[in-house]
Length: 188
Image (cartoon, rainbow, N blue to C red; front, side, top):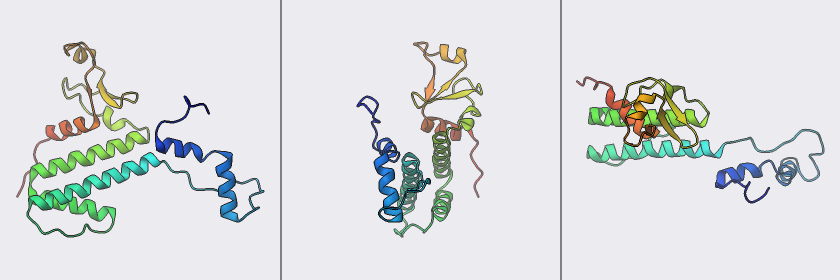
């Protein structure tokens, strides 16, 4: 592999190393002992996408930060986060409900963003296509993978920008707009 062909990110480089003959030989010998691995099957570590793991860790970190911020806003005493991912998300929803509609909308925007980003990592942009454009309300937003942004495909919407370029948004911007367009939930 030439230097121009080598991946620039660390996770991509590590994933490429998993397919090298040296790695396969090492994983075979370490799994079955020295000299084993002369069969036709390959043993090694399970394939894993490091980018997906990093995304999950980032989402979990954002929810933990949300809970800590909510506890600080409510002047409650610091306690450890509950064990388990689902328990942490339930705690975030409970904390948001205690603090009111603004916090609930913030959590909903965070959750929608994390969901969409997870789907995009898996190649699914359906949820984006179902959203109306924040400017022209046309349903038909598209995910542009090359720039990692969302764009409106309506040529009349694009023509309204001063420079005539397409209107584009990040997933975070669209999640905030999406939650802001929904009516506030009745409280109490």
